[in-house]
Image (cartoon, rainbow, N blue to C red; front, top):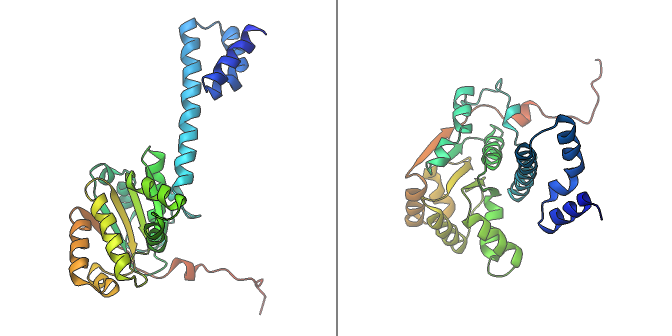
Length: 252
């Protein structure tokens, strides 16, 4: 076994994946450029660090369960929904997340609530935060099954360790009293340590109609609205304005 092969073996043993794969390439470049031993070590370490950071980003992005559209770099600012470019860029800076603020995106269907929320979730993941995207329906399901199935228990633990939880379509559908209490308990546990991004087509005043419990609704809103920015989106549905057809355009 050559020294290079031995080093590769050591790299695999130490789980230095990038070094074992790129060792020949790095050594060849170092020999051609006659770099110092310190520079060579620095290059080797940086290669492994970059590889691990990329793998970590991929893992956190996968676990975030983002919908198909979430890249805010592609956001269409020609759509008039009440949110301008400056405001969106401020949201993307994520200073509110660092300060444990919540964000509520409120407005009718098709005004970009889910897209913006998912984009902020992805931005958070990209900056190293643990962030998760769940619909209200999906979140209730996790809360129901967390003591029954291993997958739900694992997902619940991830949510509890998160820096950001996006809850899409909150209060769109009626929930049972038991589910409402479970949801309140979750929000109460996350209060002041995990930021929430909430999308809803109902104003907070209307949440009591869905929960059918004014006391519980008041307690829930007290925790969510304590440090919260409410962004009201408006306008026509982007999907309806840009809807697709299966028919080719025909000349009349």
